[in-house]
Length: 186
Image (cartoon, rainbow, N blue to C red; front, side, top):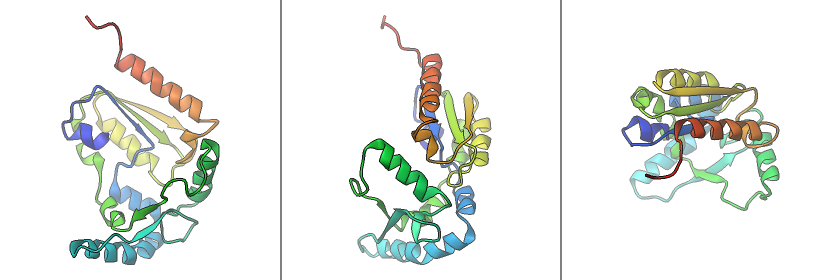
């Protein structure tokens, strides 16, 4: 939503929950060693895409030091808890990503156009987020003229489960009530 709103899409409001706002910040959070682990498969897949090869997939989430898109400390445990509490089972949906996206994500930075967002924005950050760094998201929130920043003392996956989920959703509903009032049409 940040990219859409920042590039002129007319929206009534946006909510960015634990958002990816800066490719370089995400790469720094990933760490040099993890980036080097992913680089060969990501670059090979990207080059293959130019000659029409099908994607080479990697696990979306894996244990620390694995060749997976998200291998930050605690990522696997947070994701597993999210799956368990949602009632889903591992494998119900694909859990892989094309490796080529890992090259592109390092350059994808909605922060670049955040100052052009002219609708109200709720930015919700997890203070212990080691996937989508909270400091980068807070900086983006400060650059959006009509933003509201909410911080939660948790990690990246925690806003989706108890005990944080009810508060996160309540904050979203309050924001929408205040900024996008819905009433009888005249």
